[in-house]
Image (cartoon, rainbow, N blue to C red):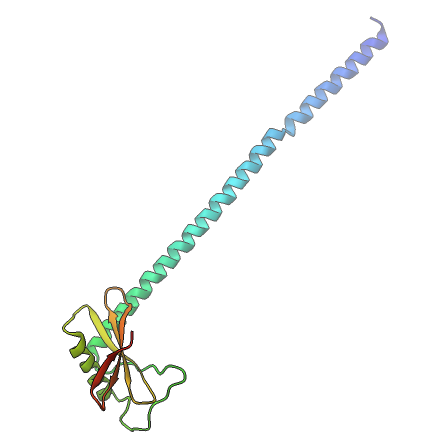
Length: 162
């Protein structure tokens, strides 16, 4: 072999070694693995966030039910009941309409119609412009309204609304 052939072979070998070194440091499989790992981490984080949000929603729901149940139980113990007037209705002109005594009288009429039941609470939701009382019967266990009753104290009538 002549001297120029030896030089060319040496240069080619050096280039091959350099190419191998470059590929070793910029391994496409390594980048693929890193991308796959990042995607998996992002997916796990997303799932963890969703689970965390679901847990927070469940906790809030349970807390709201407990608070509603406590409020219902307090309504049974306290003589006065909060009066909520729906939009579009107003108290009638009678001066004693909507008083605590009238509300209690309406609740007592509903209790008589409903019957003896320790699993529910009775509360006055509103008083219509006609002077009729809307009484809600709420489950103490689930804090949901089971029925609404419309009570006319003048006629002493109780009708089921819901």
